[in-house]
Length: 238
Image (cartoon, rainbow, N blue to C red):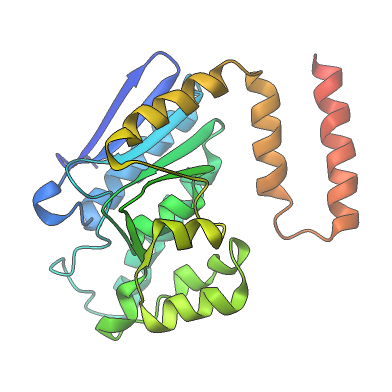
């Protein structure tokens, strides 16, 4: 499914996915989520992009889900709509190259989720992060399923039960952001990171990403064994 609000461009090995709905703070609806999933699937299938930049048009990265979107009529429809979020996250994780989120302005809800789960998260110094769903009486259980993997469990719980907005500096202190840059330099920083990573071995980067992804829930002993197997196969393939 396509959407005029989701734009994909590619220059050589660098692809860019832009959420292009600035008049709505880049809030996403079901059609937009389907378009994001489809775009990620195409990129995953072709495997000709080594870097994927995720950005928002205008002042904001993403204001979350569109509150004016269609409401589910029953639990089955509700599960399907929430399943889109899970599928987006899975498609993002499955991208074999490195994903880089460029957070600016509002990085809320769905937007905060994909920014956190990108491999590298760059943030403008005036960006604002939050999961405001609880303020609408909605428990963000999809968020809770993964957030404590990226930051301390108590802090993750605080973020979802208060819906508080945090700044870029606090997000970095919590391990949710890699680097903070002046607001006008965010796109340039994304380009700098792309060039830096393109100078490195593509297969080695893919192996690093696969290891971090596949061992997230493993016992350390199992992770050791997986690491040995992965490296042995990597060396044999060279």
